[in-house]
Length: 262
Image (tube, rainbow, N blue to C red; front, side, top):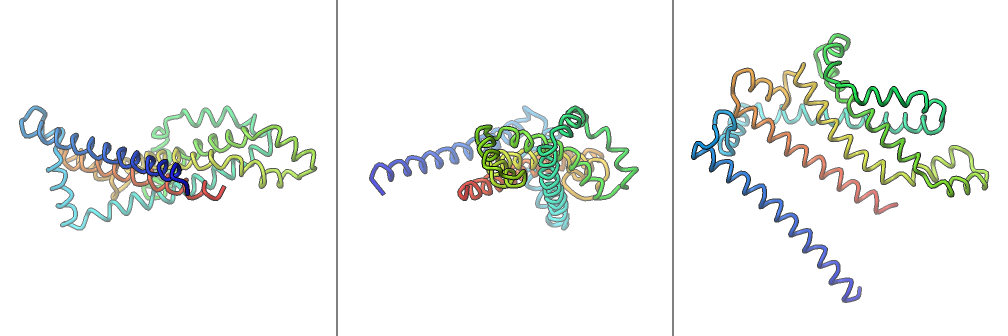
């Protein structure tokens, strides 16, 4: 490795460290300012809680054996919904790509379903599937599936036309073209759809927990609202932010590993 390459890699590492430290500094300053404003009673501790109150709430939940069960419940529902959403989205997008007429017929319905507020379907989902985990997963699936289908399908549609013509000239079958050209060319889009899907899945799961759950972070937020325990509400929101960040980082790590093999 040349000296220029070493300096370049060193520069990239330093830049990453600077970004990470800057992000941590922003979070720390925000938390300190939040605590400071609450202590001076500039903002209401009852409404906005405070970092120290949130930490005490988490400690209380752990001591009552209620913390990890809620985290586990939400994560389980998110993982199941995410896997189903990505898998079904990929399969349906592939079918639509192969059958252009079907895609043209379905397109306005996908747009309509994507713009429809899914929470409006909540009561109907509960009636059909019952007030249980299944309803939460269906709610999340309704939100992430359409996004997955549209994103992956658009990735397939953007396959290079000249390469498609080359495969056609070489008399490649539809399956060969799909497996060796269309899907590999769309790796970046497919992986990017993971990021959208995980965010939409988390939204769907929390919406479902708002409606039917007796466990999970969404339930904690609803319960805190009902008993006017806004410390519990803010704790739930902070936990959601942390989980969302961790899931996003896991997808980014997966993206880097997969793209290395492309």
